[in-house]
Length: 94
Image (cartoon, rainbow, N blue to C red; front, top):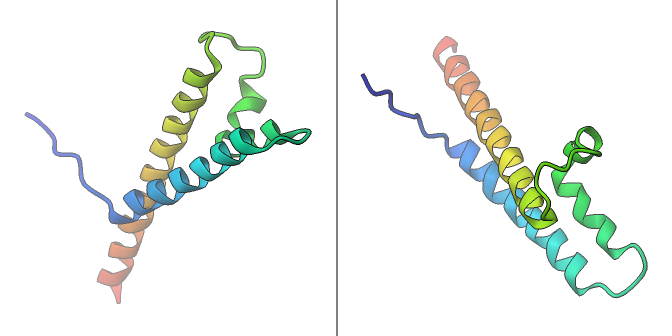
């Protein structure tokens, strides 16, 4: 039997906000010409650089960066899905 994946409007909203946030930091890092400009690109993928500091399973940094952005997006979607379930259960009790 095939299960349907439930959709979450809050989850999708969190993903869109996170991707806008990420693209702003990427644009800032690419257009900045001062010292430590590239440091701001780490903020959207936190906490993964702290845990995966010496792990070099993907040699291209861009691929690793966007994989971690995807991982954070998935986590935010499930967080939004959980919030939506909590709000629906709370409405039923009231």
